[in-house]
Image (cartoon, rainbow, N blue to C red; front, top):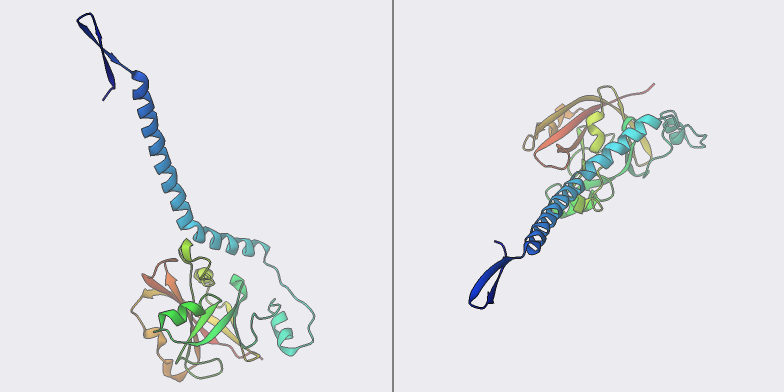
Length: 234
């Protein structure tokens, strides 16, 4: 509605509309609308930024990937050198996947039913599920980690398992446990429902490695599972 002024002059009345106020009001409404639009766009970019950052890091690694062979005085490092690995993050328990540039510490025997405990473990790496096998033992070694997370948690949780999607059959996975090297090769990769636990079965006592993360990245709708079998090198 336009603002009006009533002017009285010698028994006559005149109604005068101030069009400048109407223009100011329209300009203010337009400014508010643009601000909301920019705010929504900024919020959307913040929301998806973890996915872009994880993807960029993976792509940069693929472009610049080259063997990193160094001389070593230790038998374990010599073995790792042949695979282009400098050294593990932790000699007590580490997971290394050269193809996706993953080299992270593994927290041992984490209670998956205790949310506080496993969230704390995932701040620094990936976690080994309590009650599942350990490297060198019969049964299923079950390791789980984040694929990515929402921006407000990105500083608290590390998306080490984001590039698991790119692993292919036959690619190598290395576990370091108490100073010993264990080699696995990817057998299969699949997406399953969150309540499907068949892949955690003991597999008739045979040793195997199961890596699990949430799917799609940043959600908890389903699970991405990578299964790898041990390899005995000559």
